[in-house]
Image (cartoon, rainbow, N blue to C red; front, side, top):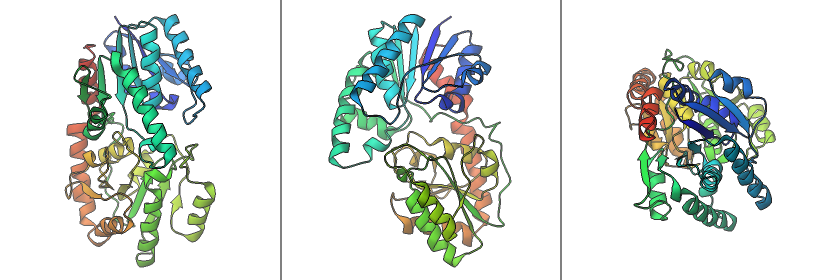
Length: 371
């Protein structure tokens, strides 16, 4: 039996993104301790069969003293728990978790790169400094990893180009975090009224501005078509403000649905799922959920997003930051609603074949020699 610590960037993700993985590890007879920076999730983690420990992390903070505090927080916990395996995912937990595990003499260290996010999409001097810093931190922290998992080829190639991972580091490509195809059941196509849905944290890099621009153009031509937006406000520097949302709602462009712990009713109630992101996603979980529920997808040819769409089969890919291309893709479903049914069926088939969480987790656990 192995004792495994899983380090997360925010605790809700342990339940939403790693819940099935935790349950699969425990079914194999291993012990799991989940680490997160948020309070109040102990009971939900315990329902998965794991124990929960709180560690110090400020997800969008850049204060060096607080970042050092995060590393020492992890070192203290790992030296007390003495696990045989540490598995981390997302940028800060991967860097800090790998460093802390190495300094705590943990024999088996694994990391998952779930996208490069906001920092690697910006081109300002501040972004360039942060990118250089992160490259060095990744380079140093990943050296003792047994395996580094990537959710798309672009991120792996970027790490190889930057010499962050070399021939000495084993790398494995996985199909995102997977999706529970039973929980995210196939839902009937919605043809009247046609509605588009975008689900994300409210940050500009998710393509929210382009979605609004496209909705504004299409709303004038097709006033009965609905454009929906679901997701929480965020502390990210590129966050959309509440005043922006209020203005769009008042203008009659979108229906803002707030935030939710269960996206299924909203996905079920839409015709087409849209995510025009340029955020450097790993593999967007919301797209996988929409595919599993039988929805056509419109996304961008950006890393992470483009892996989910077979062009003209289960949806369309558009260039990043291109509202006009987005309008054309969305209008194609308005003009030919039969595509909603056809492409939705193909989305479900791709989800079952490629993104079933049971298949994805089995692949990961085999790579970690846990089954």
